[in-house]
Image (cartoon, rainbow, N blue to C red):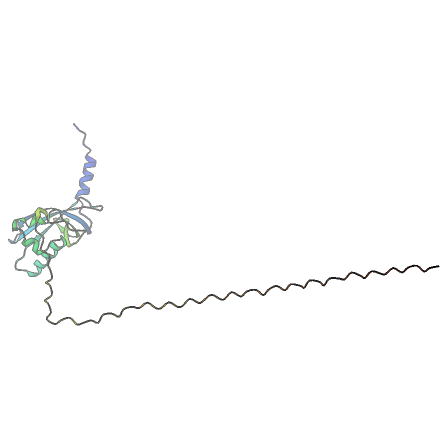
Length: 212
């Protein structure tokens, strides 16, 4: 027979027996079913499971009461459904028996308070529902409400005003390109005149010697 660690099991049971801390918790709806209140009103009993945080996997219970004679209570009822991503059109699209199934598997954020005692123990009460992430599609093929399409505007009998065409854009005339400066020829280089030829000296005539 397997040995049982009673101390570990007792500690685990004591931890599970502690209520979740007050505040906000993300939950997923695990079960939903029709029931009746003590005064005969129909209600949907809900069992949620906390999905994150130090209190993950702890259960949270709540109920959605249908008070036909209390408009304010019904406003709160539909407000809670909207937190699950459900509109009145979703509820109207299925049979009454299938309404609880629309909630199963959907995620929501609940605000918990534990300031009330029940049989000497803190009672876990869901104070409000808030949207948490994207709502899942309706389980069981629940129909979504048809999108509201705005009607097309009626054609006007007044003809549209004539709009003068915009003047054509004329590209500016490019500026003339300046002519290149004329090339000035360099002045001719002066050449020195050739020196005049030097005349050779005239020969000296010989004088005959005198006769004796």
